Image (cartoon, rainbow, N blue to C red; front, side, top):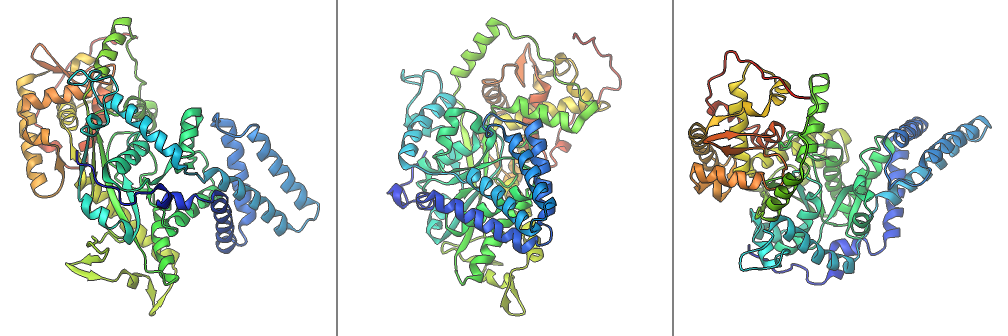
Length: 564
């Protein structure tokens, strides 16, 4: 893996260091800008916003508590409700009472959201993460008799960086660069941040981290000092949502480079995002608009990123959450076989022998309208440079139009999704899982998804030669798609024969999961966990590939009794 030289050598000169050099200033600016926005855009609605927020927060503290929450938080919101009602009933000037309570809430949220960045902590964490990722993505004993943690050099070979990295690096000082990745695991933020700084030579990026991660004291200590800002997805109220949007806008305007997950949360079903969250995405459009209103000719540079793992640590719990949500009463919760001592030993043995890798596929840099950028950050359309300022003009004047900007936001969302599907790199595990589940699904075509997933494990039992033929045929179709620029393939998918391809997939998929998503035994392909097979299969959903998998459907069959 090629390492790039640092763009900015001194930590003190990094954008993230400068942004957080006075954290108190950032907190105050966030609180003030949020208050200004609420007063300007919700005049006459402030009491309603306040009541909505207090009600939602009281409900949250009862139903979704976290250890990281402030002590007696439910009492705080109850007191807020009582004090507000008392002041209004006592004849206090209603607008003043509402504004005071609103200011307290906004200050509370601003302090919680704003992160921090400590260069010394960053340097220490980088060493610790090298050990952690070495353990996760390297064999227990590396070739040559190395230690269990491996080495930095061995680890770097496990990261595969694809895409126009030279182009992205050249644009770093020509605007605010935002990395917009797909989102599959809680590891994403840390792993992407680590890889960007260690491998691409770009300074550290800020990123949003779910507040649930701060429940773990060690994790909380480091993340709160490494530029992460907190995002509490339990807080579904308008005041908190506006605080988050304002933080995004401020950080962009002040030039802090950020990792921004447009999907909002991890993909529960393993599929690449088909839609993105428009709320936070709109801050990119609004920030560019604000630049031009201030005669500040600075470009917001967007780099889509697709992250690809052979295995996802949380795959089992994520697919369970997805199936429970979409299946409701039709879904039967998974009944897992009891783990035995010997199975635990075999599991640890597989994990320690892992030599899996992770791939980061960077897309072409684009502006906020999805236009590609040249080396000088000029927007290009129909092979000609264009000035995107014109998109914000009305009757020849620069204006801020929320409704117009939301139209632009929806367009940008569509362009990001297109880039995700184009830059998606198919790993052997994705392709083999797709073929396995599609053959399974078509064999039992008269069964719906939820009954299919609850079939006994011996119902997926295809002859290996039939599986390999299907795998070979589908791989050829994917090569055609890659040549047309619709998708990307890993070197293994492109060059291995079908037998080597399934062996590579099994080696990588089964190294982490206790029950094998797919395996080979006695000349047949089988699965011990249809849900995991379905999860990894979903990575190739959305490409209309199912028509290339041919399996005769069983007209009738008899289910074996299921042991409870």
